[in-house]
Image (cartoon, rainbow, N blue to C red):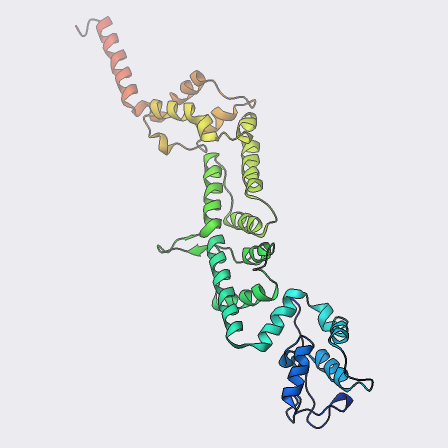
Length: 323
C-alpha cells in the first residue's frame, strides 16, 4: 500500500493564487464557501487540505483568472496528480473516509478488525494488537472486503501462521492450518516418514496464501513415502498407506514374538528389511517368520517355551525316562 503524503499549509495571509487562508495554514478563512466549492468538486475540504497536491490544485481552481474551474475540469486535474496515480481506488477511498473521520470511519475500522480477527482464527494465524491494527488498516486501504479480493487478506495472514502454545503448554497449529497439518502428519506417520515443524509451517502458509493447494502438499508427502518404500511406491501414490501394506508382517511379528502390534513400527529393522528386501522385493512371510525365530526374544515367548518343553518330553520318552 502506498503511503500518502499530507500537505502543509502556509503560515497565514494569502496562499497560491491570492486565496486567503487561516493563520494555522489548514483551511481557507471563508470556510463555508470553500467547503461548498469543495463539495461541488466531489471532495470534503479537509480531504483536499490533507494532500499537498490537492490543496495546491484547489487554490489554483478557485483563483484562475479565467474563472473558477468546473467540477469536471477539477476532477480531470486530480487524476493527473502524483497522489492519484500512486494510489488505487481502494486506497484513495479509504484515505478520504479517514480524513473525514467521525462515527462512520470508526465503524469501518471496527468492522475491519472483526473481519481480520475472524479470518485469522479460521486460518490459524495468531495476531498481536499492533498486528491486528496494521492489518485492519490494510483491510480498508486495500479493499480486502470487496468482491474478489479476500485472497489478499489470506495472503497477508498466511505469514502469521505459526506454532502456538495450547492450554496444556504444548505447541501446535490452530484453525484450518491445524486441521490441515494434522492430516498431513497422519499420512506421514502412516507411511513411516518424518518432516520438521518448519516444513509443516511452510506448507500451511503456502496453502493459506494461495501459492499452492492442500492436494499439492499431500502429494509431496506421498511422493516422499513412495521414494522411501521402493517397490510399494505405486500403491502409496494411489492412496494406500504403508502401515496397511505392512500389516501382515506386523501381525506376524507380534504373534511370533508375543508383542503388541501397536509397539511395532515401520522403522523396526525386521519390518523394514522384510518390506524392502535385499533386491527391492518384499520378503516372503515364511522367510520372515524364520528370521524372527532366530531373534533372542523368541526363546522367551510362551510358544517357544512350550515347544522346547514338548521336544524335551519327546526325547525323555525316547530313552524311557518318562512314561
